[in-house]
Image (cartoon, rainbow, N blue to C red; front, side, top):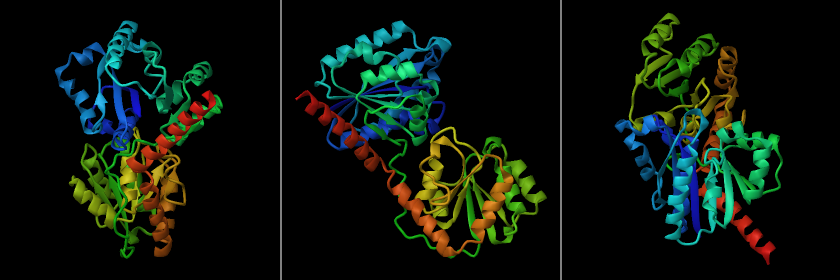
Length: 389
């Protein structure tokens, strides 16, 4: 099958943006190519003229090379017109160039448009007569209107949603009888389940935080919560990372007399971080994620029980009480109570939850998600063919 993907891509600010929703479909594209399909991608870089003129940003397009193995890429820049979006002239120019490219390619069987509210009307300009699928992201869910969705319902044969929460938000706008699938395709392939059974024989409950030490991470809430637990002598928190909050955290630990309970370990290698995850029991964070929350999945893959803050991006993946725990942001009391509860649970109970975390992540590999996603899409293609007969 010849599959064409159209996806918007904003200028990446740093390497972390490799794992944002804007990149998610390209992980799936790689898997489709490995499955034997001919995959072509038209990633649209929605950028301002000032951004494009800055030589420091030239690397932005190169990131596709790391995730789009065997996928044919045809990259065009669409200049932004301040807050009004893409200039119409730039859109028409890109469409004209893409139409020329399409004439040199095999006939397209399937068109997948990722983040349709940001690709504007390029799909209309290209005029490709084939089966079409739209994949909605968090951004789409925030900007979608009922009239616009009604228009999409006429254009597209099936819908995808990057997260369960995106699907629920859009369901509130309008119900659709079109085939739907939650792609959840932000999960890169290196997030894999642990290959060994986790042993629950630590003398203390080993807590772990990994991330940049910034005010946004609310690490002071985690440390204060530990200080208030009745079981603080039975637990230990390792903090991996560096950042501007490091001096303040050292002072807080000293002031709360937690030098033997909380350890700032600084930066570590990825290999060492995964080793520490396997040795830890609980992975705890106290902030909402601006991206998918990859750290949670990495920790869960090693059997760590996650304590998360309510966030759309982990909604449907972490299920409170089954494979982790979900709390409200900046609720120190709730975190204190949850830590005490976990510390007083039997090792058998903890091992059962830990097993669930590994099973959850084992279903979120690129291969399995891409296969499920394509199965839904292909079933709609076959259904459409049968109706024509």
